[in-house]
Amino acid sequence: MKKIISTNPAKNYEVIGEVTVSNLNEIKKKVEGANNAKKLWKELGIEKRIALLTPLLDQIEERKEELAYLITKEMGKPINESRDDISWDLGYLKSFFKLGEEYLKDEITHSQGNSLHRIIFEPIGSAAVITPWNFPFDMFLWGVIPNLIAGNTVIFKHSEETPLIGKIAEDMMNKLHLPEGVFSEVYGDGNTGAQLVNQNVDFIWFTGSSTVGKKLFELAGKKFIKSTMELGGSNPAILCEDVDVQKTLGKIFIKRFLNCGQVCDAVKRLIVHESIFDEIVGELKKILESKIVGEPENEKTNIGSLVSKTQLLALEVQVEDAIKKGAKIVTGGKRPANLKGAYFLPTILTNVKPNMKVWHEEVFGPVLPIVSFKTDEEAIKLANDTEYGLGAVVCSKDVERAENIAKEIEAGNIDINNGNHWVACTPFGGYKNSGMGREHGRHGFQELCKIKVIAK
Image (cartoon, rainbow, N blue to C red; front, side, top):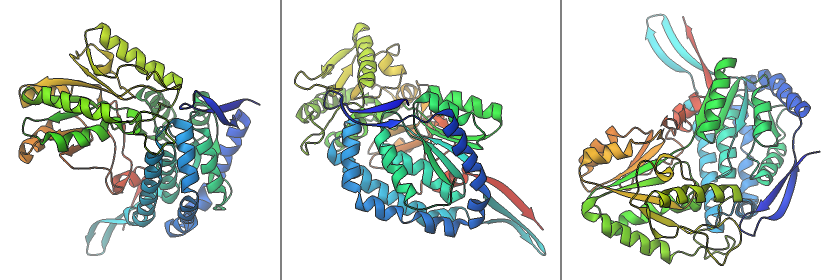
């Protein structure tokens, strides 16, 4: 039987466990089971479905330290960030249980005399849910639980980079004793994912790269089934000349370097007014050089490793391309000499041009290109100079000015100053190559449904 070997990228790829890859027959049986369970799961009703799922909260609470350490070991995330993830997950999960029934209750669209029209939100059916590795437990919850609340049955596949988190997720779900076929999990890489979505599923829910997302979207079109895609991003942050530099840079550091820069919604291009450009670059350099890059299980570590050697090599190609084309390294730009594994120093690049990979590709690592602008029109043009449109940040003391800039940016989620769109009641998703559809909030829950109108 073929195995996936899980390694620790922060300890020179030390082996920490393995899982067995699901074969085609297993995948077919699990999809068949999900289809057989559709009617029962739908007819239970949302209140009973939530009641069956709610004990997951207690399991997470009991195993949160185990989860945090496994996230850190499988992907190199600093332990304090992993703990924060689990706390955040609990908050989102509570919101899903609290808000799901409200978001999916019948809606009256017309009432006049004896005439009444209402919308009923019905489950789509069996959902193939495929998630990435960068927030491994978050993504499991975000993809699986709202689908189950909405009444879809789920066949889940996690990333091959974090299969042990996938095993814990399956173990927790099995302990809920849901009806047979309502939830199942398959294991493997992209080939397994391809085998899954080519079965008789009714819906594809995917978070991952734009390249894979487009292929899945094309397949969904051929099968004529619905899909929701949250894909890559290359978010701009625009800093106007009137910003409070110290307060603003604290946010920019988190928005770019959290999770070693491996965040789809991270700031990946910093666009700074020319009058404060040198100050911003200098102060950000000080911040980065004050941070501890090291063993992620050490609570003092600020930046851990990348998830894998593959990710490290891809990042190095992007940085080397920028250097060859004239970019200047302000700080970082290489692996740390004293660490073995998928480590890369937090990096600032200036003299960045549009033909560089770090500008026009998604950069999934601790590298930040910084460019300057003179006018708001120029800043907007730079911000929109990307095939992606997931999110953006606009900072200015003049809130009206910031809102006017935000309206012109082609992205699905834009934070102004200290704004933060990350709450469970707010929809999340992108424009352009950053995806189709929305997660979270009323819109996200309704994406998981078929809309039926009953008029009488």
